[in-house]
Amino acid sequence: MKKKVLITGAAGFLGSHLCERFIKDGFNVIGMDNLITGRLNNIEHLFKLESFEFYHHDVSKYIHIPGELDYILHFASPASPIDYLKIPIQTLKVGSLGIHNCLGLAKAKGAKVLIASTSEVYGDPSVHPQKEEYWGNVNPVGPRGVYDEAKRFQEAITMAYHTFHGVETRIARIFNTYGPKMRLNDGRVLPAFIGQALRGEDLTIFGDGSQTRSFCYVDDLVEGLVRLLNIDYVQPVNIGNPSEISISDFAEEIIKLTGTEQKVIYKDLPVDDPKQRQPDISKAKSLLNWEPKIDRNEGLKITYNYFKSLSSEELRKTDHNDFDKYIIK
Ligand code: UDP
Image (cartoon, rainbow, N blue to C red; front, side, top):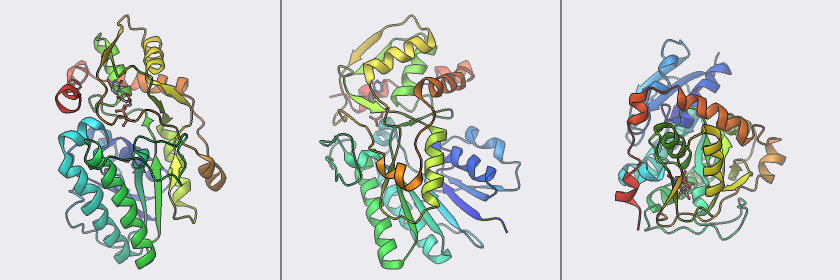
């Protein structure tokens, strides 16, 4: 009998990669998405497969899945600053009501749950690199609070279902991840820069560009998640690529990669934008025998080719300037 996995946020960037991976690994996959930020394009090639079913459903509402269920991967959530600033209430609901429904379902079915938590639980961190024992520096009422606190609550309720109801749970703290199927207009820095280069616009650096991020290629991340699901460990585990870079150096890399003749321009830094971020992955290394294999050079080339293959109509559609409306001070 094939094992069955429910993946929420199936039409999103990470969700769609997870659907592909679990189908490849021989699972029956139920993908669930309300398509607020997810895109059917990401998964429509799976619809013809017997091992894939799609439920167009909002995970924040009661979930009914007939029959047995072995795993639930909760990956539904707006996950970029523009998205969660535009839809703050849904962001809070999916990280609270959504995970509550998933955990209730897991309890009823005896399924194991893996949640997508985030480096945002560390907020604007005062410990560097961030290790799992660090509790974070989060502003609950700032613009990022709806996402950060939803994810922190999600960890708390997941742990409570584990200790109180004995549900088998896993918590992945996911750091910045990139790759094909990211939404071009989701406002994150990589699709923003590549989109700008492809449209012949200047690249917008927020602040002075000295803030850092550490970018992980999606296939590496998915491998880490699969390994985490398969070990017996309930505490959070950071999954990300520790190769850290400043946003100005990252802009230079994108300029070189795309060959654009545009320049960089500077805009105000969004409120509460973390100054530095790098995962300490010692735990993942020792527990999962995992570390990223794809360096930025290689990952960026693959991702650039994906964005280049998009239609010019899709390329033109961008709400990147919404940043001005939503979060610039
Ligand atoms: N950023 C930027 N220009 C953009 C979009 C983002 O300089 O057009 C900066 C942003 O302020 C942040 C970093 O890039 O410091 C990463 O932003 P992203 O939204 O990708 O992720 P997060 O801040 O959630 O890590």
